Image: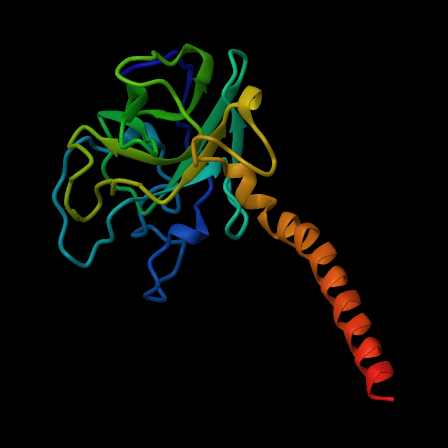
Amino acid sequence: MSSGFTSTLASATATPAASSMPSSGASATGPNQGYPANGEAFSNLPTSASFGNTVYPGYVSFVTPTRSDSVYPLYPITANSNVTFRWQYTYLRVRPISLTLDAVGPNSVTYTVSAMDGNATEVIWNLGSVPTQPAPLMNGYYRLQLYDQRGISASYSPGWMMPCTTMSIALYTPDFYDPYTTMSGYCPLCFYNAGQSFHESLTPIVITLSIAVLSSVILLVNILH
């Protein structure tokens, strides 16, 4: 399923994503570390090549959006709502011919955000232009899938881009959002406010019970004396 988007092409000035680097202790710079650490222009990378197993695969990390701890980036489902995705590579040696970015919704429906040229490093997803068939966007979490022409199930291959499925976003419908309850059961904001709501709801109950217990104790003491 496709939707409106704009994209940006890669350049040789991208910076490596430290969070995407393998944990083997290898240096992040040097001529054998792949793009962009080797200083080679992205456009000069081959679109097909074979490397030994000592070479890392190419990793992808999202620069935008980013998540903080357990809080997912949150966007309203409105006609004017745009979500900007921007990514970068580490250890890449083979340039993708094409890229696809999907968003898998809470209803297990896969929405194609964009099918683009392999040089792209940014795309904008307009939520208002997403078709309503086979299913409209709904409240909940959407797992992103960014992969090259080999597909989402592409296996580990030295130097080639690994599919990226580590980022998720949350979408919600403002018109039907209630900070305390939700009919659909997929209310991202409700999870964010759950702790505060629980505290606000529990405090009056605790105070009431405390007063009742204290009154009972005083009454019992008076009866016994």
